[in-house]
Image 1: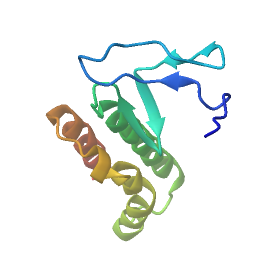
Image 2: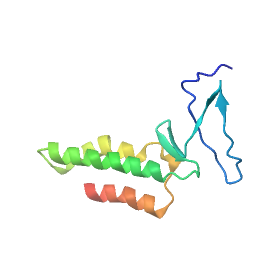
Image 3: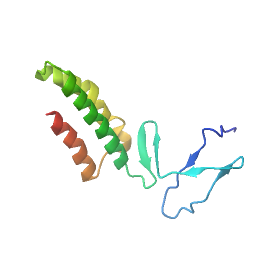
Image 4: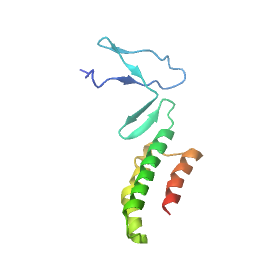
Length: 117
């Protein structure tokens, strides 16, 4: 199999007993990372998804701010429609893969929801 060297830039080591070896491809050393975004989900080398929660809540909060600044008619049905179509998808994207199970991550997501209500 041929690899595109320009796209193979980074490696991530998983596990505590990993040897943390350095890898080279065609003479160029591959950099080591502790967090990486793959298919829209942030993952770290300790398999915690806190970064994903932070990023999702950050996007959702920005969208709530945009909605608050731009929507003139703030009746309940309109706001719920905008929330369900623009904000909630960021909070629920790929939750089967990164399901938040730490209390701090759950509280972060609930904070966004409380801000809307």
